[in-house]
Length: 160
Image (tube, rainbow, N blue to C red; front, side):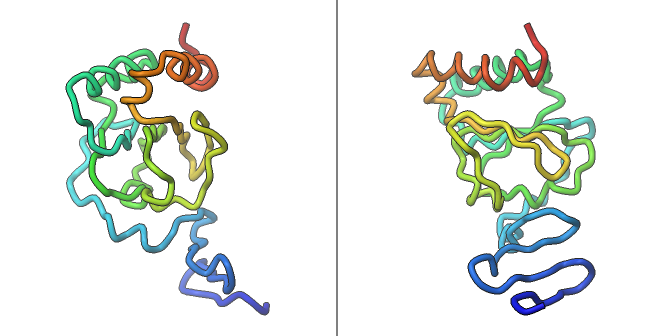
């Protein structure tokens, strides 16, 4: 096929606009995602990852705990990732079901997916990605917080 070149295993590279996207295991992950590889051991029982950039205050941490608590995800079941780590580092962790993204751009996570709005939910790579604005923005804007709860979290997690 013109425009394609096969790589090792089931990887295919497409020339043109999408030459930086790696198609492997029927998933789309940018190959440069390995640059921000997370090397620490992920504790047993982790069911959710939280990409929130750097948490700047205790109030932001408390807000995060409230949000995840309302989703019935206890602290021992989630891992907050701060810094410039990529999703690729966590991709093979089978127990991870939910990825929360608070104000972090998809590109900085090494993802080749696009969220439609400031609050969105996407099912990708066998996991649920929930994207929203930063924790600070949620704390400062009750309307955004209510919208996240009513449109995304409450329907998905089936909480009252």
